[in-house]
Image 1 (tube, rainbow, N blue to C red):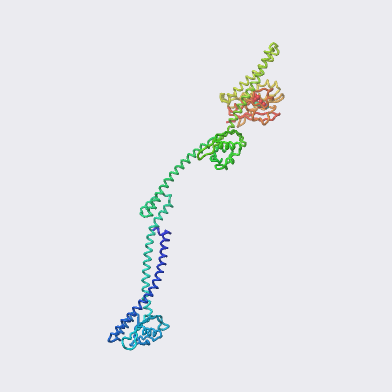
Image 2 (image 1 turned 90 degrees about the vertical axis):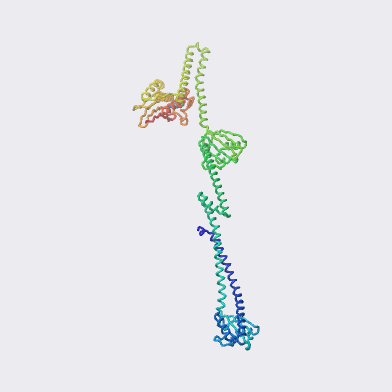
Length: 592
Ligand code: ADP
């Protein structure tokens, strides 16, 4: 009964019903009109025929009055009236129902006398309804001019006509209803499968239900059944294709996800562009190294992402030449050293180029350090060796015979040899500390005692230079460390302080203990260090001004050794200084 709700059903059946109803009504109207004319003519013939047979009966009857009376009764039952009248329309036999001799009636009688028979629609009296009046000439019966006259009452006329119309109407309604039922039945046969198919398409997600429906529709052997079967096959094929596509897409997505994850985890930056230099891939390394904003991404032009002309030029060159191009440049914004390699992709759907960027700042820094170290070492070795060579040349050249000069030159050779030895020892110690080869013996170190020992060793030097050397330690300070390392740290810092403090100045070693930390502070009132190079004094062989240090001695390794020892002990070192006023080095041990 689902078809009840079908719009298509009601459209087809309703349209059919309305159209056929209109057609049948028109037909009925036309039929009724034609029938009434025909029936009137037929009735006229019948009446005239009957009048003729009555006339022949009257002519052969012995007692015509009785025959006439009998006919009068018969016709009266049928709604007609019958008279035998003279030329003026007056009745010739006795009758209760005398026809009025109206002009209209007389015209019928006169016409019958003239032509033998006549029929006419007349109003007997103008106020009466219309009747059909029939007359035939009956003068053959012998008694002067006589006419047989009859009239049909309007009721009789109507009854006969409406009977025919009613029958025709009933038949038309029956035919209409049968037609509507047939159309409804056929329409249900079309609508039901169409509804099922449309439902099936709408519920395409519920696969099993759909298949059931399609299969049940495809049981039909007509065109709709074929359509349903084809639709079902299409559905199955579509499902299979979708499943295959989904699988392929899932596989492609997972491998592309893997590739993206791998490329994103790379330290190197990777940017892929097509032939028109439109970005097709960009990893996070590239964003970081090239400073590409998040708003810029796939689909943007390369020049929108990277605004470094040399970079763009190299990509352009690689695309044009079809060969790999490389470039090393310093990023203007990030101030990093970058190496760029652009590899062109010549063929295929992804033709274009891949640019790989690597940050080589650290490599370059280490290279620079190595260079500085080598030149530092060479320089530090060269100076004493040159002095030694000059002294030996002078001695060999004859100064040996002069005992005073010989002693002076040999003392110089001794000093420079000592300097060389100290330099080599310093380098060896630094190398050990840097490489972690120096084995630290961690123990509770009484820092006050160690500092006191170190200062004792420097007393003579301090006195010679007229520099006050003070130890300030209010509490006992114990740290877990290597006592030799602590000694080297204090020793190097005090040595520097004494070297750079002129006579009359003061070098103070203060040991500070608090709840959170222990600190060794070495303070002097010396020449100080310019602020801009404070960060560099811990580098190997770095010296503020070579000329300044020449007379003060030193290899440029002391603070580098201090820094690495502090790192190895888990301590930190900081420096504050004011040129002309003095410097303060602070070694900080966190407690706990
Ligand atoms: P050096 O062995 O030449 O002293 P360091 O590594 O110990 O080498 O020190 C590096 C440089 O830092 C020194 O050459 C010196 O110019 C500067 N410096 C270190 N300590 C002081 C200080 N207390 N006052 C002034 N300058 C200092």
